[in-house]
Length: 305
Picture (tube, rainbow, N blue to C red):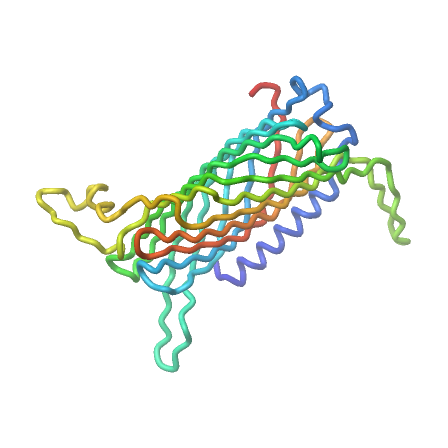
């Protein structure tokens, strides 16, 4: 699929998702007060899919930027109440990348890459009671996140395989605004009329910033051949022989702006914009990445944890 076709498909899916969310029917009653809640706590199984635009560059191979589009999938276990929030998320993402190479008057080179990510995130938040009210709910806490990257670019020959692990302990802040429609509204557009039913909705924003950052990176380059000394060259220890952990260096920040619509059966669905950026120095050569994502989520309310 070409980049232009992928962009057209992304726009079509985005418009369909927006229409689906904004035309959803729900209930005004706060889900945290619902009979489906257990001791004021709600448990959800969350499934989500996102269209992602990613960019990275790795100075261990070249300073070129790679950017492209792909798909991100997540599953999450969520426990939420007005006072506390806890979640565990697992995610996988795949992107088709193209290098930004300066234009040439002679032969224009072209190189593609595959960018895959595995992500685990644990989040814990607590309400700031002195600042929160019926309209706004403020929470502070922390997030543990670890991301494993895998990059493939056959045109780089011995440097065709790129790996790095990025692990962060992050400070987290969240604000939730109640934007419910409390009464029915009728819109008259002359040719047709629209009835907008009461619905429970939230607008939520969360930011996570790394305060303790760790990464697992190679030394100067990925193409490193240590002393063989009887070791199998296909062994993982041989491939990772030049890798080292770096502690308390680098930066990472990610945000999530989410619009949630609750349904009468206790479930919910949402549309969100997710942004993530990281600078990973390593021991010698740095790796940098960023991504923009439009994510659609389904919340399945469960009575048990």
